[in-house]
Image (tube, rainbow, N blue to C red; front, side):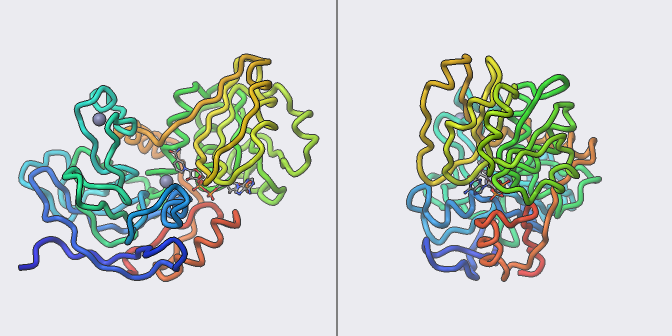
Length: 350
Ligand code: NAP
Ligand code: ZN
Ligand code: ZN
């Protein structure tokens, strides 16, 4: 007998082959589960790192996608937070242990036993592979689902579930706001959300980009300044300027250049995760008591706070909506830094 809910999807089958059609079954909803008709899913650079096994061998087939927006199709008998027809989102994880200090403190992304990733991970049973949002339906426990405010259209809401929260969380944690000079390294999916959110928080925002091609866009998004790092002299010109720098770059770069841009006691927070290690020399850190830190997405609570903040401040990503069969061409454009500024897949077309 066939159990489960049939899902149509796009999957990766090996690190090198193009992605292609795939179908599989989602679990039948349990008491606390919500069945979501996926409408849109953003393409995050993490999807590409994962399916190409740049972060270690992936567990194929992989259905990527953790910027999911959709509409509730059905709810389990004990669900209290959602109703059929609600606009909802799912981000980078679909469960966690719920018992460790991180989970108890509503910081599930830092679950001490490892949260259950939305794809290329395992469900709570520890053996069923999780599959992500490049598909038409998903079943998720109600405690790991976000409410999408009515004023956010579903296509534009999708990238907030990863790109939005990944910048919102460190900007809040490191107190970006009035009187603070914030720089965002890399104007891609994450970076452009960082510009919009940091601006709305009241910070003075600078974009550090590796070409001069995105200047006009950056200023339109709300950046006060745009700096192309192609010209090495900018590292002298802007030395000691920033309170906070967030590195969203997906590739390996010379980090040493950037620490000198921080003030005394400034922090450089890395969210970009390239394939190979980033080298640093301690000198620029020790010289001005600077900090080097990292940050991972955000909790369910903070993601909801971010969605409400974006709705309140009219913050949405710049998106290009594509059909599922355009996925491989979209990946190539992301790798060439040619995305303006997030691809979003229309799953109604699958
Ligand atoms: P993206 O859209 O591809 O943006 C990356 C940006 O990095 C590009 O737009 C480009 O900006 C810059 N860049 C790319 N190649 C470069 C190079 N060779 N030299 C210098 N700059 C380069 O990627 P994304 O989706 O925003 O993701 C960015 C990174 O964050 C990825 O590594 C991803 O896996 C990671 N990530 C981390 C978290 C977390 O929780 N920590 C969450 C999501 C994603 P310019 O053209 O402006 O220079
Ligand atoms: Zn992501
Ligand atoms: Zn936990």
